[in-house]
Image: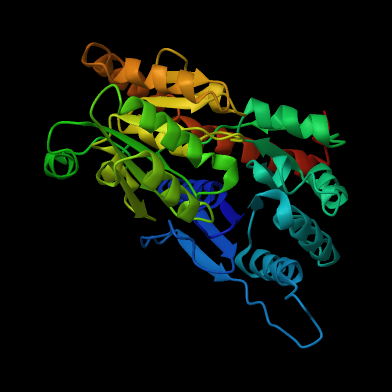
Amino acid sequence: MKIGIVCYPTYGGSGVVATELGKALAKAGHQIHFITYSQPTRLDFFSENLFYHEVNVKSYPLFDYPPYELALASKMVDVVEHEKIDILHVHYAIPHASAAFMAKQILKTKGISIPVITTLHGTDITLVGKDATYEPVVTFSINQSDGVTAVSDDLKKDTKDHFDITNHIEVIPNFIDLERFKKQKKDHFKKAICPNDERLIVHTSNFRKVKRVQDVIEVFNRVRKVLPAKLLLVGDGPERYPMEELCRKLCNHDDVRFLGKLEAVEEVLSVADLFLMTSEKESFGLAALEAMACEVPVVSSNAGGLPELNLDGTSGFVCKVGDVEDMAKKAIHILDEANLGKFKEGALNRAKDFDVSNILPIYVNFYEQIMENVKKGESTIA
């Protein structure tokens, strides 16, 4: 198949998943064409089956804001027409699904029928999509897609609850490449951070309020009063400075390190003993899955799709959002020498369920089903 993939090229989960999906499809022999405004951060190797088409957004004095959606729709038309694309897969509803609808209508006038699949990732529904400014367009675009997927049952339910969706939503979870995300031998790194064999706790995020990084620090502060521990905070964002200030108030600054954005986060995860994800909204929890793949158990909140991923008592524990006392208690239980090995094993076993080799065929089958439906003129409305 020739597949056009539209995504954000940034570090966010939707862009990461879209890029990794494209790379896996290319490796399986499909021809993948990425369409976005800059090269995706994870598109970091050459393949004869991978192509990148840049959306050029020109600014004119008439416009206060460059019309990206129009430029994107035009680029989709161009790529589909000239590269003979079989199907478009757009990740994140805003503005990709509406731009795809526009492109589809333009292509119809040229005698080209292009199936469009929209994948919902989370904040495009739970946060931005619910804004009255965007809701009518989001609803229309989802209903006009030939196929719709969501990354968790919780996100599917949230979409159905808050939007007037008539289209069927297929749940296809996020995935992990276990060839990349696996425990590496980095003993020297662990010794440098934890010279006295302290337990190492890690959190990665974009440091937005929804991630509740303050809860991570509160949990760590309780844990370190019971057993020697260090905390690594990976990522960057608007909450980083306030969190640095909080750490100065609560913790010994030698016990906490802010590492900023890291491309090879799997190297840090390889030496971690516990991963904390305390979000108040989380459609799936890709960062937690990456930790599990590196044999790191997870203490998470019960937000969104996290209970679907993190099996309570097996790969870690699930606690109520904001319950830092319970999170600290569960963290201490996992970090006990008598329990840690069992939870590390449980985390890896759970991650194997989401290996790309298991999820990729589901996507391929869905593509084929939608292409066949469009060919027959059938609706995907459930």
